[in-house]
Length: 161
Image (cartoon, rainbow, N blue to C red; front, side):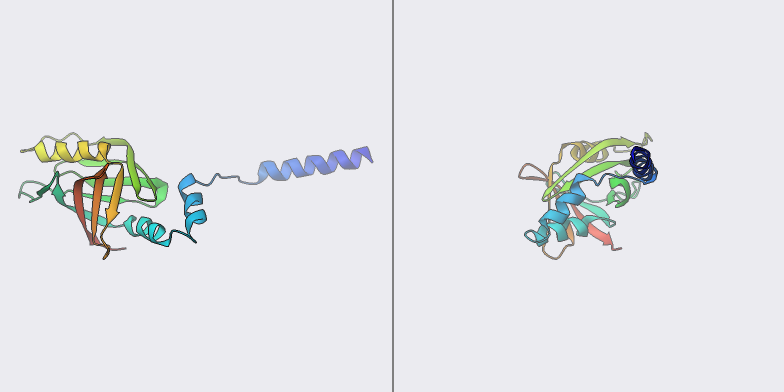
């Protein structure tokens, strides 16, 4: 009898050991628990991901791209919560955390090419480190990144998945 219990216990442990275990990211579990009461928030979060967001305003000034710069933009990837983009001259990448009306970027890095007029590029990279929230226009075409209640940048959706 003891031998059967021991073998059964070992079998259960072996099954548990061989079964792949994954933790669910907190933001996904939050989405699931909030779906019934906060559909608008869930829809906003899903509307941000896998889209090409072109910079149109930075620090309260309309952004006009010069011919020498690439188009500044951000893309929030679904896989691994990765963010990629370009700040005008250099490409950047990192991770993001998206919850309700909050967004933060971390582990940010960029290429280090030298270009003319790096001032706006530096402002954009600094802004990405400082923001803590967002709003999305009702039509879903304008993404505003916020620091507190201040709008730091606005992006227009160009590419839809």
